Amino acid sequence: MAPGLTATFPHQTSTVDKHVPRSIFPDGIKTSGQHPPLYHQLSPYQDFPHEITGPTVWDADDYKDNPERWTHWFTDEEIAEMSEAADSFTNAGIPLTGISKDNFQLPRLSKFLESMRNELLNGKGFILFKGFPVEKWGNHKSAIAYMGLGTYLGYFVSQNGKGHVLGHVKDLGDDAKQIDKVRIYRTNARQFFHADDSDLVGLLCIARALEGGESDITSVHHVYNVLRRERPDVLKTLTEPIWYFDRKGEVSEGEDPYIRASVFYLESGGKGRVYCKYDPYFIRSLERFSTAGVIPPLSPAQLEAADVLEATCNRLALHMILEVGDIQFLSNEHVLHARTAYKDHAPPAPRRHLMRLWLATPESEGGWTLPFHDSKEKKRGGIQVDDVAPVAHLDAE
Image (cartoon, rainbow, N blue to C red; front, side):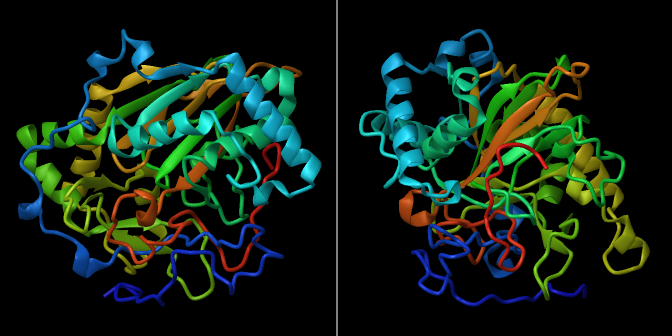
């Protein structure tokens, strides 16, 4: 048996932990981090639904010619309210990592954001905001307003071992072929369909590429239904806890460098919704462990399942282009997303740049009930290495 397969974890509360030092975590809440699922809560394939119905199942044809169904233009009043809240936050001298609904108040816009949060969690799972004034405000004020907006949708969690709670999707020249070391968002390579380690993900476009870098999304539940009809053998393989996911060195002391998990789960707690947790770059980068005999290599059935899943997502995808000032929010529970490879403008023009948020939505606030020990925590998921402090830089590093 590979190490760590029977790991247990101490109970952790869903409220602000009085033992978390605010000198390190300004809002008093620490990102939980990556963990294996609770294997005894995983459901066998025969318990999964024969068909998923409801608003989380959508076809790209329903939306591709109707952008008004998934696009919201910020009004002048909403921009003014965010601007006032950002200026007030700046004047208070609070670190950006300490931003919250309490110190970034949006009394009018918050009502709309509450409905959008429900749509992300329980509806189609995506929205595109337009007209965010990044060029007028600059990176600092834009980051404040963007993170403040995000606090009405969830709790920001760390996105890497450096504690970045404000991430930056930008080509830093890393070698995309070194997938056991490199996170693909730091390159200009294609990102295949995946879900991030959070309940919701946000992307704010600061600068576009010369060409490429466009977005594709797909309904996990539509993909599920298609696989159930066309390739039930593939779907069964995706529900089994036989998949190893690389942690690429972003681990706390005493933790394993990989996690054994499924791709599709059933939500625990009685609702029975299907949840997806997947990234092909993290399953294909483990050769150093499989070669050493520490974990099994991907089987032919797994390799085929990964290829069929990607092809099905591509077939059912909705394509969108993020312009400067657009903000895309997605569910990571029931939406998979991808991006095309891209080429940047020649210097001195700015490189493609997206500010990224990973947001957690705990059970106590309407989030999905997941078969993980931290499901009740406010900042469940994310990537947390030991007590690395959260940081919110204004550009990539």
